[in-house]
Length: 173
Image (cartoon, rainbow, N blue to C red; front, side, top):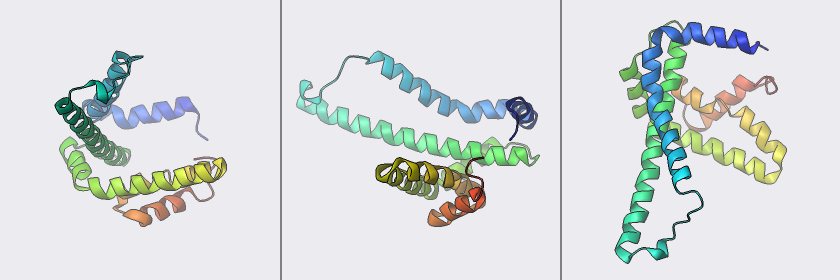
């Protein structure tokens, strides 16, 4: 195990030279989190019922809600993948290329979304069965999205790769 101070020092050494790029890559993710907090605080204790709206506004509210959720999913997945790819390159001593990282996130959006959905369904299934299998499967498949983003694995191959990477290291994971 690595001491947290050593981990922080090593992380700073790896990422500090591209600090501006990291801010740009993580800004959309931080923006989504900030909006979620803002709306949670704004509507705290004030439930909004669709039946209180005019019929035309109900449709607008529902469509707007689903468009907002879809936009959040797309932005979060693209920029999370861009951060994963940039982290991998930075740890290998390469310079972070913002545009290229975002393009990788864009090009691999659907395959990586599919891997994330598969992983979530497996872990939820384990949590529903009994808590312990869900925790074990969550750890075992924790690197599936990274395997899809960095190694180009798709679907179950990404899950198997994550399983290979974590084999014998679940407690460390």
